[in-house]
Length: 210
Image: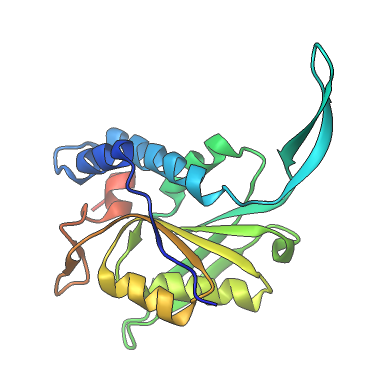
């Protein structure tokens, strides 16, 4: 079953993306903006997570209330830029477990290869929120999703801030069951695979490297 790509185009997100794109935004502010946008997007991405009903006693009377089910969500950044989005999601759901997926691009085949994968226990029972701020060619995202499926994960969501049409289309085609949450789909990729107009290299800007 094909799921719909959700564009998180809230005015606050658009405002923060404008600041994120600015070449004059320094590392500290860039990191803060990534976290803030991720938190706003997570509000939408987490709206159908598993809940349980529990009786809560207010100062006046008992009431039945829904609570997020314990250990039901895993936050999984694709290294390294995905790390910048983690705290934004955890600000909303601090009990979520965090795993990491590391990929590099093979110089000969240009295909993404796994070099690290550490997932929380009972990952197959959790809603997996895969984090990657830039959905460019879609290669890394598709490989990370395949890794999760090989581990038995059934409910996977991909959260990216900016994407190129080719990357979004690749994920939609190869993994039509994965819900994509993205803040903005940009024009295209340049000859080096960078999103245009984009925000530059997200990892470098997050961590102050070149």
